[in-house]
Each structure stands twice: as C-alpha cells, then as structure tokens.
Amino acid sequence: QVQVVESGGGLVQAGGSLRLSCVASTSQFRINAMGWYRQAPGKQRELVALITNGGSTDYADSVKGRFTISRDNAKNTVYLEMNSLKPEDTAVYYCNAKTFAAVWWGQGTQVTVSS
Image (cartoon, rainbow, N blue to C red; front, side, top):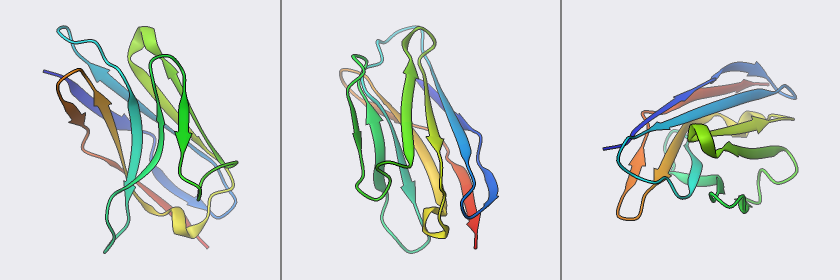
C-alpha cells in the first residue's frame, strides 16, 4: 500500500508563485517515477510534470520555463515550484507515485489563479 498526500495549493494572483509538495508513504514498495497532473473543470486530467528516481524530468509544453519539478528520494517527496502563474493554470493538482506494479494517486489540491 502507498499513501500519497499533496499540500501547498491555494489562491494566488496572476504572475504569482506557489509551491506544491507531495509525499508518498510506503514501507513495502520502491517508488519509481512521481508526477504532477491537473484537472480543470470540464477538462480531462493532464500531465504537468514528472520526475524519475534518477532525476529525469518531463514537462507539459504549457508549463515549460515556468514550473520546476524536483524530488527528495530519501523522503519519497516531490515538489512542484510554480512561477508566473496564469488563470489557465487554475485546476485541481494531483500527485501520483508509481511502483513496479501500480500507480497511486493523491486526493488533489486546489490551485486557483485570479486575474
């Protein structure tokens, strides 16, 4: 079993910054890749950024240059630093953690960017 918990969402003005955190807790499994996804009202969930346990990263085109994903492997924690936020970044942000056999999701944290 893996428990995934996100934190750090909130309300921010356009142009502002937020930092999201996600912890994957497990005593049984090795965590491989971890990622951030988001889902805006009426839209499908989409990838924002992911990072492997080796540190390789991938980003959605819409966030490249503004968001940075990082990871503390010892703590099974992943961070998403979000800068130059835009109203279109408003969504529920979900974290996931991948083990060899499954993908585990958190409950999500709301990010709202006002114009």
